[in-house]
Image (cartoon, rainbow, N blue to C red):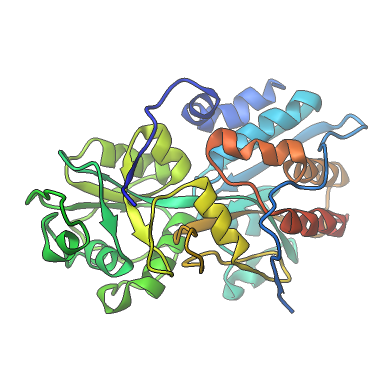
Length: 372
Protein backbone atom coordinates (compact mmCIF):
# COMPACT_ATOMS: atom_id res chain seq x y z
CA UNK A 1 0.00 0.00 0.00
CA UNK A 2 1.55 3.31 -1.01
CA UNK A 3 2.44 6.05 1.37
CA UNK A 4 -0.16 8.71 1.98
CA UNK A 5 0.22 12.41 1.53
CA UNK A 6 -1.14 14.57 4.31
CA UNK A 7 -3.88 16.93 3.30
CA UNK A 8 -2.60 20.47 2.68
CA UNK A 9 -3.10 22.49 5.83
CA UNK A 10 -6.22 24.64 5.67
CA UNK A 11 -7.69 26.98 8.22
CA UNK A 12 -10.38 24.53 9.28
CA UNK A 13 -11.41 23.52 12.80
CA UNK A 14 -8.47 21.13 13.16
CA UNK A 15 -5.82 23.58 11.99
CA UNK A 16 -7.22 26.54 13.91
CA UNK A 17 -7.28 24.59 17.15
CA UNK A 18 -3.75 23.30 16.65
CA UNK A 19 -2.09 26.51 15.55
CA UNK A 20 -3.46 28.23 18.60
CA UNK A 21 -3.02 25.23 20.89
CA UNK A 22 -0.66 26.65 23.54
CA UNK A 23 -2.86 29.74 23.90
CA UNK A 24 -6.26 28.55 22.74
CA UNK A 25 -6.35 25.63 25.10
CA UNK A 26 -5.99 28.04 27.99
CA UNK A 27 -6.79 31.59 26.91
CA UNK A 28 -9.63 30.94 24.48
CA UNK A 29 -11.22 28.51 26.87
CA UNK A 30 -10.83 30.98 29.70
CA UNK A 31 -12.92 33.28 27.63
CA UNK A 32 -15.64 30.66 27.94
CA UNK A 33 -15.71 29.84 24.47
CA UNK A 34 -7.67 -9.83 35.48
CA UNK A 35 -7.63 -8.32 31.84
CA UNK A 36 -10.60 -8.36 29.49
CA UNK A 37 -10.58 -8.54 25.69
CA UNK A 38 -12.25 -5.81 23.67
CA UNK A 39 -15.02 -7.75 21.94
CA UNK A 40 -16.38 -5.26 19.42
CA UNK A 41 -15.12 -2.82 16.82
CA UNK A 42 -18.14 -0.57 17.28
CA UNK A 43 -17.09 2.99 18.04
CA UNK A 44 -20.44 4.47 19.01
CA UNK A 45 -20.37 5.19 22.74
CA UNK A 46 -23.61 4.59 24.58
CA UNK A 47 -23.91 8.00 26.26
CA UNK A 48 -25.64 10.58 24.05
CA UNK A 49 -24.40 13.76 25.68
CA UNK A 50 -21.77 14.92 28.12
CA UNK A 51 -23.50 18.11 29.15
CA UNK A 52 -24.05 18.66 32.86
CA UNK A 53 -27.42 19.90 34.11
CA UNK A 54 -26.06 21.93 37.00
CA UNK A 55 -23.82 24.86 36.00
CA UNK A 56 -20.24 24.65 37.25
CA UNK A 57 -17.76 27.39 38.02
CA UNK A 58 -14.03 27.26 38.56
CA UNK A 59 -10.67 26.45 37.00
CA UNK A 60 -8.75 23.23 36.53
CA UNK A 61 -5.35 22.82 34.93
CA UNK A 62 -3.52 20.00 33.22
CA UNK A 63 -0.28 19.40 31.36
CA UNK A 64 1.42 16.67 29.39
CA UNK A 65 1.05 14.89 26.06
CA UNK A 66 1.46 16.95 22.91
CA UNK A 67 -0.02 13.98 21.04
CA UNK A 68 -3.48 14.64 22.53
CA UNK A 69 -3.25 18.44 22.53
CA UNK A 70 -5.42 19.07 19.45
CA UNK A 71 -8.16 16.78 20.75
CA UNK A 72 -7.99 18.38 24.19
CA UNK A 73 -8.46 21.80 22.62
CA UNK A 74 -11.57 20.61 20.78
CA UNK A 75 -12.96 18.90 23.88
CA UNK A 76 -12.34 21.93 26.09
CA UNK A 77 -14.05 24.16 23.56
CA UNK A 78 -17.05 21.85 23.33
CA UNK A 79 -17.36 21.42 27.10
CA UNK A 80 -16.99 25.09 28.01
CA UNK A 81 -19.52 26.11 25.37
CA UNK A 82 -22.18 24.87 27.79
CA UNK A 83 -20.22 25.31 31.05
CA UNK A 84 -19.38 28.97 30.62
CA UNK A 85 -18.21 29.40 34.20
CA UNK A 86 -15.43 26.84 33.76
CA UNK A 87 -11.87 27.47 32.65
CA UNK A 88 -9.67 24.50 31.67
CA UNK A 89 -5.98 25.18 31.06
CA UNK A 90 -3.84 22.56 29.32
CA UNK A 91 -0.09 22.94 28.72
CA UNK A 92 1.28 20.50 26.10
CA UNK A 93 4.77 19.87 27.50
CA UNK A 94 5.13 16.13 26.87
CA UNK A 95 3.88 13.06 28.71
CA UNK A 96 6.90 12.86 30.99
CA UNK A 97 6.54 16.40 32.31
CA UNK A 98 2.79 15.95 32.60
CA UNK A 99 3.27 12.95 34.86
CA UNK A 100 5.83 14.86 36.93
CA UNK A 101 3.51 17.85 37.32
CA UNK A 102 0.63 15.69 38.51
CA UNK A 103 2.91 13.77 40.86
CA UNK A 104 3.89 17.05 42.52
CA UNK A 105 0.25 18.19 42.62
CA UNK A 106 1.09 21.15 40.40
CA UNK A 107 -1.82 20.26 38.11
CA UNK A 108 -5.25 18.65 38.40
CA UNK A 109 -4.77 16.15 35.59
CA UNK A 110 -2.06 14.82 33.31
CA UNK A 111 -2.21 13.99 29.62
CA UNK A 112 -0.09 10.94 28.89
CA UNK A 113 0.32 8.41 26.09
CA UNK A 114 1.94 5.86 28.40
CA UNK A 115 1.22 4.57 31.91
CA UNK A 116 3.24 5.80 34.88
CA UNK A 117 6.17 3.44 35.58
CA UNK A 118 5.54 1.33 38.68
CA UNK A 119 8.75 2.69 40.18
CA UNK A 120 7.35 6.24 40.02
CA UNK A 121 3.94 5.65 41.61
CA UNK A 122 5.28 6.40 45.09
CA UNK A 123 6.17 9.95 43.98
CA UNK A 124 2.50 10.87 43.43
CA UNK A 125 1.70 12.98 46.47
CA UNK A 126 -2.05 12.78 46.00
CA UNK A 127 -2.26 9.01 46.33
CA UNK A 128 -3.68 6.50 43.86
CA UNK A 129 -4.36 7.46 40.25
CA UNK A 130 -6.91 6.54 37.59
CA UNK A 131 -6.40 6.26 33.82
CA UNK A 132 -9.11 7.50 31.47
CA UNK A 133 -8.52 6.59 27.82
CA UNK A 134 -9.83 9.40 25.61
CA UNK A 135 -9.00 8.81 21.92
CA UNK A 136 -6.25 7.07 19.94
CA UNK A 137 -4.25 7.74 16.82
CA UNK A 138 -1.49 6.56 14.51
CA UNK A 139 2.12 7.62 14.93
CA UNK A 140 3.34 8.31 11.43
CA UNK A 141 6.80 7.90 10.01
CA UNK A 142 6.81 11.22 8.16
CA UNK A 143 9.47 12.11 5.65
CA UNK A 144 10.61 14.84 3.27
CA UNK A 145 12.37 13.36 0.25
CA UNK A 146 12.36 15.23 -3.03
CA UNK A 147 10.88 13.15 -5.86
CA UNK A 148 9.59 10.38 -3.61
CA UNK A 149 5.86 10.28 -2.90
CA UNK A 150 5.51 6.59 -2.02
CA UNK A 151 7.48 4.70 0.59
CA UNK A 152 7.15 1.36 2.41
CA UNK A 153 9.16 0.50 5.51
CA UNK A 154 9.33 -2.53 7.79
CA UNK A 155 10.18 -2.55 11.48
CA UNK A 156 13.64 -3.92 10.74
CA UNK A 157 14.40 -1.17 8.24
CA UNK A 158 13.04 1.48 10.59
CA UNK A 159 15.25 0.05 13.33
CA UNK A 160 18.28 0.56 11.12
CA UNK A 161 17.24 4.10 10.15
CA UNK A 162 16.43 5.31 13.67
CA UNK A 163 19.47 3.71 15.27
CA UNK A 164 21.70 5.45 12.71
CA UNK A 165 22.95 2.34 10.92
CA UNK A 166 21.15 3.17 7.66
CA UNK A 167 22.42 6.54 6.53
CA UNK A 168 21.33 6.99 2.88
CA UNK A 169 17.88 6.86 1.32
CA UNK A 170 19.07 4.52 -1.43
CA UNK A 171 20.36 1.97 1.10
CA UNK A 172 19.74 -1.60 -0.15
CA UNK A 173 17.41 -2.32 2.80
CA UNK A 174 15.10 0.55 1.82
CA UNK A 175 15.38 -0.23 -1.89
CA UNK A 176 14.38 -3.87 -1.31
CA UNK A 177 11.04 -2.76 0.13
CA UNK A 178 10.34 -0.15 -2.54
CA UNK A 179 10.58 -1.81 -5.93
CA UNK A 180 9.95 0.67 -8.73
CA UNK A 181 10.71 3.71 -6.57
CA UNK A 182 13.74 5.77 -7.59
CA UNK A 183 15.52 6.50 -4.33
CA UNK A 184 18.14 9.28 -4.22
CA UNK A 185 21.49 9.00 -2.47
CA UNK A 186 20.40 11.80 -0.13
CA UNK A 187 21.65 11.50 3.44
CA UNK A 188 18.97 10.63 6.01
CA UNK A 189 18.36 13.25 8.70
CA UNK A 190 16.61 11.61 11.65
CA UNK A 191 14.46 13.93 13.77
CA UNK A 192 13.34 12.93 17.27
CA UNK A 193 11.68 14.50 20.29
CA UNK A 194 13.81 16.60 22.61
CA UNK A 195 11.42 16.21 25.55
CA UNK A 196 10.23 13.22 27.57
CA UNK A 197 7.52 11.94 25.27
CA UNK A 198 4.80 9.32 25.16
CA UNK A 199 5.07 9.44 21.37
CA UNK A 200 8.74 8.46 21.72
CA UNK A 201 7.83 5.72 24.21
CA UNK A 202 5.25 4.17 21.89
CA UNK A 203 7.37 4.54 18.75
CA UNK A 204 10.41 2.95 20.38
CA UNK A 205 8.18 0.24 21.88
CA UNK A 206 7.21 -0.63 18.31
CA UNK A 207 10.87 -0.69 17.22
CA UNK A 208 11.71 -2.93 20.18
CA UNK A 209 9.18 -5.57 19.13
CA UNK A 210 9.37 -5.17 15.34
CA UNK A 211 12.91 -3.93 14.72
CA UNK A 212 14.74 -7.06 15.78
CA UNK A 213 18.50 -6.78 16.17
CA UNK A 214 18.50 -3.67 13.94
CA UNK A 215 17.07 -1.61 16.81
CA UNK A 216 19.68 -1.04 19.49
CA UNK A 217 18.50 1.93 21.58
CA UNK A 218 15.82 0.42 23.80
CA UNK A 219 12.43 1.95 24.57
CA UNK A 220 11.18 4.76 26.77
CA UNK A 221 9.99 8.37 26.95
CA UNK A 222 13.60 9.32 26.26
CA UNK A 223 16.39 7.32 24.60
CA UNK A 224 20.06 7.98 23.95
CA UNK A 225 19.81 9.15 20.34
CA UNK A 226 23.01 9.56 18.23
CA UNK A 227 24.46 13.05 18.45
CA UNK A 228 24.12 13.53 14.68
CA UNK A 229 20.31 13.41 14.88
CA UNK A 230 18.15 16.54 15.18
CA UNK A 231 15.66 17.17 17.99
CA UNK A 232 12.35 19.03 18.04
CA UNK A 233 10.17 20.16 20.94
CA UNK A 234 6.84 18.36 20.87
CA UNK A 235 5.24 16.69 17.86
CA UNK A 236 4.84 20.06 16.16
CA UNK A 237 8.54 20.80 16.59
CA UNK A 238 9.52 17.52 14.94
CA UNK A 239 7.00 18.15 12.15
CA UNK A 240 8.44 21.57 11.35
CA UNK A 241 12.01 20.26 11.14
CA UNK A 242 10.96 17.43 8.83
CA UNK A 243 8.98 19.81 6.65
CA UNK A 244 11.96 22.15 6.28
CA UNK A 245 14.69 19.56 5.68
CA UNK A 246 15.10 17.52 2.50
CA UNK A 247 16.07 13.98 3.47
CA UNK A 248 14.49 14.23 6.93
CA UNK A 249 12.39 11.56 8.63
CA UNK A 250 10.67 11.65 12.01
CA UNK A 251 7.91 10.05 14.06
CA UNK A 252 4.90 12.36 14.42
CA UNK A 253 1.30 11.86 15.44
CA UNK A 254 -1.11 11.57 12.52
CA UNK A 255 -3.05 14.69 13.45
CA UNK A 256 0.02 16.96 13.40
CA UNK A 257 1.52 15.23 10.35
CA UNK A 258 -1.64 15.87 8.33
CA UNK A 259 -1.94 19.45 9.55
CA UNK A 260 1.67 20.10 8.49
CA UNK A 261 1.12 18.56 5.04
CA UNK A 262 3.78 15.86 5.39
CA UNK A 263 4.19 12.61 3.47
CA UNK A 264 4.19 9.45 5.56
CA UNK A 265 5.30 5.90 4.89
CA UNK A 266 3.24 2.73 4.89
CA UNK A 267 4.47 0.46 7.68
CA UNK A 268 4.65 -3.35 7.62
CA UNK A 269 2.27 -4.68 10.26
CA UNK A 270 2.17 -7.88 12.32
CA UNK A 271 0.40 -9.73 9.49
CA UNK A 272 3.00 -8.65 6.93
CA UNK A 273 0.85 -6.01 5.22
CA UNK A 274 2.13 -2.52 4.46
CA UNK A 275 -0.47 -0.19 5.99
CA UNK A 276 -0.65 3.57 5.62
CA UNK A 277 -1.57 5.42 8.83
CA UNK A 278 -5.31 6.10 9.06
CA UNK A 279 -8.08 6.36 11.61
CA UNK A 280 -9.52 3.06 10.38
CA UNK A 281 -6.15 1.40 10.88
CA UNK A 282 -5.95 2.78 14.41
CA UNK A 283 -9.47 1.56 15.18
CA UNK A 284 -8.53 -1.93 13.96
CA UNK A 285 -5.46 -1.92 16.21
CA UNK A 286 -7.48 -0.89 19.28
CA UNK A 287 -10.03 -3.63 18.60
CA UNK A 288 -7.24 -6.23 18.75
CA UNK A 289 -5.78 -4.94 22.01
CA UNK A 290 -6.37 -6.39 25.45
CA UNK A 291 -7.86 -3.91 27.91
CA UNK A 292 -6.23 -4.09 31.34
CA UNK A 293 -8.19 -3.71 34.57
CA UNK A 294 -6.86 -0.15 35.00
CA UNK A 295 -8.10 0.65 31.44
CA UNK A 296 -4.62 0.91 29.95
CA UNK A 297 -4.01 -1.09 26.78
CA UNK A 298 -1.29 -1.71 24.22
CA UNK A 299 -2.22 -1.55 20.51
CA UNK A 300 1.43 -1.55 19.33
CA UNK A 301 2.04 -4.10 16.54
CA UNK A 302 -1.49 -5.44 16.95
CA UNK A 303 -2.61 -8.43 14.89
CA UNK A 304 -4.93 -8.01 11.91
CA UNK A 305 -4.54 -7.37 8.20
CA UNK A 306 -5.84 -3.80 8.48
CA UNK A 307 -4.31 -2.83 11.84
CA UNK A 308 -1.85 0.06 11.68
CA UNK A 309 1.12 -1.17 13.76
CA UNK A 310 2.23 2.10 15.38
CA UNK A 311 -1.04 3.13 17.01
CA UNK A 312 -0.86 5.10 20.25
CA UNK A 313 -3.34 5.20 23.09
CA UNK A 314 -3.63 8.36 25.14
CA UNK A 315 -5.02 8.97 28.62
CA UNK A 316 -6.09 11.62 31.06
CA UNK A 317 -4.68 10.69 34.47
CA UNK A 318 -6.30 11.98 37.67
CA UNK A 319 -6.11 11.29 41.39
CA UNK A 320 -8.87 9.00 42.61
CA UNK A 321 -9.27 11.17 45.73
CA UNK A 322 -9.76 14.87 45.11
CA UNK A 323 -8.90 17.30 47.90
CA UNK A 324 -10.95 20.09 46.30
CA UNK A 325 -14.57 19.02 45.82
CA UNK A 326 -15.33 21.71 43.25
CA UNK A 327 -12.35 20.80 41.07
CA UNK A 328 -13.30 17.16 41.42
CA UNK A 329 -16.79 17.92 40.13
CA UNK A 330 -15.37 19.80 37.15
CA UNK A 331 -12.99 16.93 36.36
CA UNK A 332 -15.82 14.41 36.51
CA UNK A 333 -18.03 16.54 34.27
CA UNK A 334 -15.21 17.08 31.76
CA UNK A 335 -14.43 13.35 31.59
CA UNK A 336 -18.15 12.63 31.21
CA UNK A 337 -18.21 14.97 28.22
CA UNK A 338 -15.10 13.40 26.62
CA UNK A 339 -16.63 9.93 26.95
CA UNK A 340 -20.03 10.99 25.61
CA UNK A 341 -21.18 10.67 22.01
CA UNK A 342 -20.56 14.42 21.59
CA UNK A 343 -17.02 14.19 22.94
CA UNK A 344 -16.09 11.07 21.00
CA UNK A 345 -17.50 12.47 17.76
CA UNK A 346 -15.01 15.34 18.05
CA UNK A 347 -12.13 12.89 17.53
CA UNK A 348 -12.38 12.64 13.75
CA UNK A 349 -12.60 16.44 13.38
CA UNK A 350 -9.00 16.68 14.62
CA UNK A 351 -7.79 13.38 13.06
CA UNK A 352 -8.04 11.01 16.00
CA UNK A 353 -9.87 7.69 16.30
CA UNK A 354 -12.65 7.41 18.85
CA UNK A 355 -12.72 4.50 21.28
CA UNK A 356 -14.67 1.23 20.95
CA UNK A 357 -17.99 1.38 22.78
CA UNK A 358 -16.94 -1.38 25.20
CA UNK A 359 -13.95 0.65 26.39
CA UNK A 360 -16.03 3.84 26.60
CA UNK A 361 -18.53 2.04 28.83
CA UNK A 362 -15.77 0.89 31.19
CA UNK A 363 -14.27 4.38 31.37
CA UNK A 364 -17.65 5.97 32.03
CA UNK A 365 -18.25 3.59 34.92
CA UNK A 366 -14.85 4.44 36.39
CA UNK A 367 -15.76 8.13 36.78
CA UNK A 368 -17.67 7.16 39.93
CA UNK A 369 -14.34 6.16 41.50
CA UNK A 370 -13.30 9.83 41.65
CA UNK A 371 -14.18 10.90 45.19
CA UNK A 372 -13.28 13.67 47.55
